[in-house]
Structure formats: structure tokens, C-alpha cells
Image (cartoon, rainbow, N blue to C red):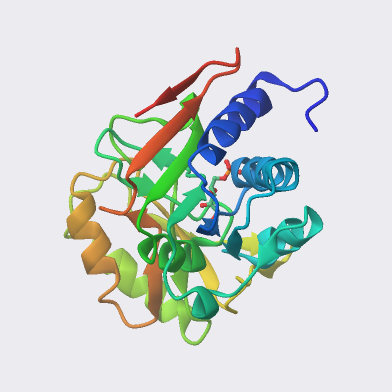
Length: 236
Ligand code: 5RP
């Protein structure tokens, strides 16, 4: 499955492989989205095949669903599962309190719903995603297409009154056209550089009409598995 991996892929792979050890027979498992989560889905497929685990999996995007089916996992919807034992997902940034920025892969809405509906969220990451303060990675905001420019202006106005360093926002594109998420929305990326009060920002952003959800995950992640290019893994 791995062949000759670059250090960054090796780091993602070893974190993913370690996290799969948390999966037990009979569990309902949420599957994240992104390159690290894709390693986890492949590892999980292998474990399910080799050890005969009976698990049901709830993916957080169409592309994770396709990969999960490809590797032979039993894919169900969140409505069928209702509640999950465990979700394993990647992140764009993780701070020392396990606050996260997610949504680099535009799947933050389903990811947040699925992680929140789980007894435990395990984040898998390479060491480059660990930060002192969140915000260097642009914060994704899922907004409905209707009136998105008005929503953008309202967000920028609101940022003026908050403890952040940057104020610019940009509409995420897919080539020459705005990107559409799996839920048919757009993504605004907020270039904040430094987020002083994560909890406050997460709450305030969701009060703006047109904002569906923000990529700050607060009090959701329970465990972080960090992989390194030399094959080492650490649990936080
Ligand atoms: C997708 C996400 C991803 O988990 C995040 O972008 C990390 O991706 P990768 O593992 O490819 O670095 O939030 O919406």
C-alpha cells in the first residue's frame, strides 16, 4: 500500500495507521476527509479485511465515501448511524488545547457534524500542523451562495472588532469558478494570521446570516496522533 513514501506522506501514514488501532469490532466510525484521512481509510480497509472487524463507516465527503467503498468498508449515512463511537480525521492546524482549524479540503460542515456526533474524535496529523496559536492557516467559512458578497462584507466588518491580526477574506475558487462544497455552498477563507480568542470567534462567526459553519473545532477533539517523517508516532 505504501511503496517508497516521501517524509510527509510517511508521517501521515504512520499517524493514520496508529489511529486505526482505536477502532474496535462493532464500532460505528466517522471517516474524515483529506490526504491524511485517506491514508486512514486505506489502513482501516486493510484491518477490516485482515481481522474481519465488523464496522460501519460514516464518511464526511463524497470523495471519502467513494474511497471507503473502494476499500470494502460498509458505508452508512449519519442518519442511519445516529451516533458514532469514534471519528478519525485530519486537520489543518492543532493548538495545545486541541482546538483545530479544519476545512482545507472544503469538507468542514460534514466533518463538524460527524465529529460532534461521536463519543471520541481522534485527529491524525504530521508535526507541521501543530501550532502555538491558530490562524496562520486561512480559516475556512462555509457560506450559502445567496448574497455571499454581503455575507463577506458582514464578516469583514465583524473581524474589525475581534482579537485577530489579519482582516482579508477570499472566495475559494475551483479554477475560474467559485468552489461548491458537497452541500452546495461556497467557502470564504479568512486570512487572520493569529486568532487571539478561538472560542469567541467560533461563536460570533456563526451568528452572521449566510454563514453555515466555520472551520474552528473547539472542545471536539479528544486525542491527537502526530506522525513524523522518520516513522515515529506520538499520542497527545
Ligand atoms: C478537509 C480537512 C482536512 O482534514 C484538512 O484539510 C487536512 O487535510 P490533509 O490531511 O490533506 O492535510 O479539514 O476539510
